Length: 152
Image (tube, rainbow, N blue to C red; front, top):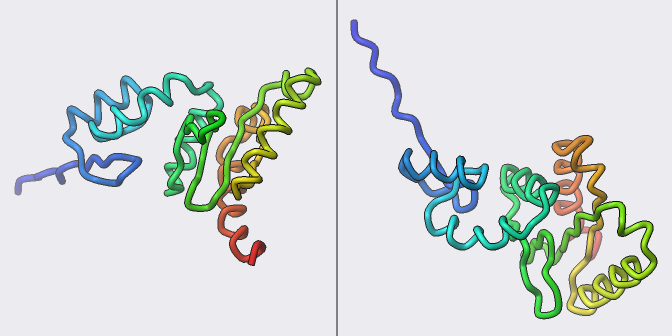
């Protein structure tokens, strides 16, 4: 009896389309996540600009099927992670956001701008990403699932 292994399936984490193994391997090596060529091109600038903590959270949200965008420009500023469908922006903040009064004021202005455009801003400290990424990503998904019922 012969054993024929199943053909491995490779999919883009962003669009869920099948991708060739060579594209899968290249993308994992270059970006740390499996992306089709189109999404490699689209996400490359944002992934390169994003902080490590933002990238980690972005990937965790994609793994949970959240239609997120990284380093999305909203006409005023770049959002660390934007979820336009839910009208939620996520800012991943380092410690300087808490200790620098000018930074805190700038953050408040950015939050107001987003709120005026109909977006809620979640501020997530880096420490939450590094200490327990997956639990925090799950909480964000729970928040996204709850927010439409709370808003209505």
